[in-house]
Length: 508
Image (cartoon, rainbow, N blue to C red):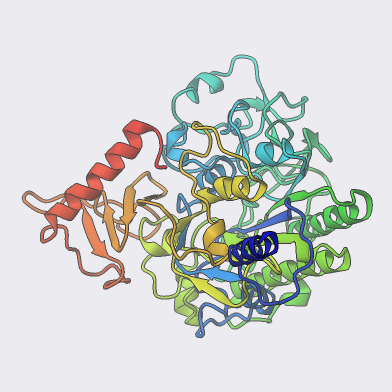
């Protein structure tokens, strides 16, 4: 009787295990390493596994997809840089913060309050060594210059950005930088590679202080000279070497962890500066695509992914590493598409900054050998705010009610245990603060125009005309047929969803 009961329990337990592609599954620690690679301005259609007509070959990213799962309906919480990064690390939409539109610049103060729990905090408290390498773009705790009203100006809004006249970048940082937000170490650049000051931050200070300056590089038709604003810079700073340098540092983090920390789990948050402007492929990658310097820079990004995968292999960490590759928003390559016939955002309407799909629908690939089935695709509606809840599920931590208020657990979909998330809707947000809500197949845009880079950014509402746009994304993926008038009940339903998310302070 006991033997029969034991066999029955064994069968039940086996049936509940995640599907794998191997009959032999080694013992896997409960807390896997997590490597999160965030490309900058990479479009849904830039990677060749997702776009057969891409003029760019991405074999390493394609291999990652073949060895894991690819989400085809994944979205960024915003169609621009800073608010997406805020959403990834905090699990909440950035419009809940002081950042209601736009992005931070290089001289701005921190957007994430010290008291806010981040993914790095969560994992650090659960025994992880947490490292960040790359583009921060969430503000730094500079000391304010005497007489500046900068802090007061940013108390409630971010309509006025900081300048070198507001902050003293050469004095010691105050509290509130990356190492005060859950990272044991951080190395990278303050903001985008076209925003001064230029230099590398290391933990809570500068690797080399920006005591020099650089002139602005002007935008040319093919970005041959790149494009960046003039401003303060470290004497040894070279724009062209940023991607190679941060990649070298990320690989070093993996190597040192594998060699010195044994079974301690690692979080590596690796936000790249590419393929955001300036497009600066090194000599090795020039001419490697059929989409100009932008395409060559994407090929370089693919090589970075390959280097990270190789480092994990060499340290014997691959089998116990969840590696995620995604982008912070859609591609910003309007003229590249025209010149090279390359659709960086595939057939999705719009581009970076826009409220349309091309602004916020992005690649998302996850690989975790022996846990995530290989060569899978998922059409589950997801958002990059979901890292917080997913990380909590992986380590068996229950999130407090006030933590990750817009974050959903992706793990059951990743493991093939269920097809969709228990999510009601996703909120999208454009460069200038235009809202959109996606629920099921329906997407409601609260306004006319794109809200971003594609013109017209905003359109005036004519008397008696619709004040917004409603699309059925399943039937009309190109967002061409506005059903705002015909489907008034759906408009009312989605309007209520956004109103509730705002007033209740959460979407989960």
